[in-house]
Image 1 (tube, one colour):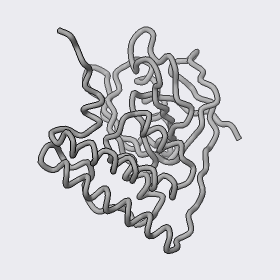
Image 2 (spheres, helix red, strand yellow):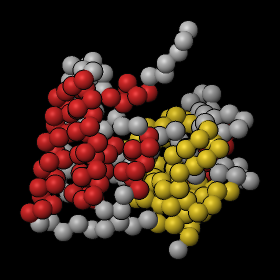
Image 3 (spheres, helix red, strand yellow):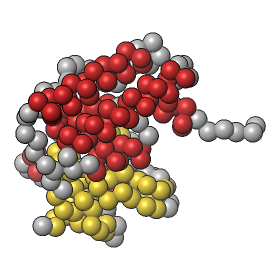
Image 4 (spheres, one colour):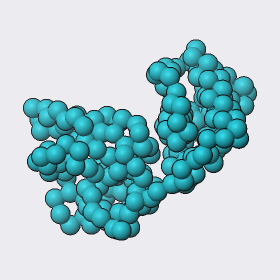
Length: 224
């Protein structure tokens, strides 16, 4: 079933169950926040975000191409500044598929469908997958400790679905890999995928130990 939600495309991939701070300064997204704040029930202050495949969050041309799988979010906090901009907090609720984007109004409006995923059944195989994911992430955190802040605070979730979302959100992977994790419909497969990605990061860090592999990949060569 298709529904409509205000849309906030970003140059990042968000995940369900994760709280994200956002700075809102463009007129169209400020209008979106004003619209959400006029909704009486805070639980209904919902909008959606998809990653920008090509283009920019701001500017005359903006996003040229969007990913189709994103996240429905709930606005939980909003602080308006003297210049009219907002600092907001939103928490990811669940996944959506963007069918069509309407940019003719005061703010972008997405025609979206829910994107449910499989519900895992706890068994010895799943517990082994979860344990491998936790131990790999623990090793990754230890490897990063000397060069950057811990990517995750607190204990890891026990629920396999939320564990998969937490590790996907906490691992500083390139955007296409994060999008692949978001699009994965099975939490078990997602845990296996993020484990493999983090192990690849660890192998790369053993070759170039001063930087995470993603930072090496993002460094642009310049002849100047």
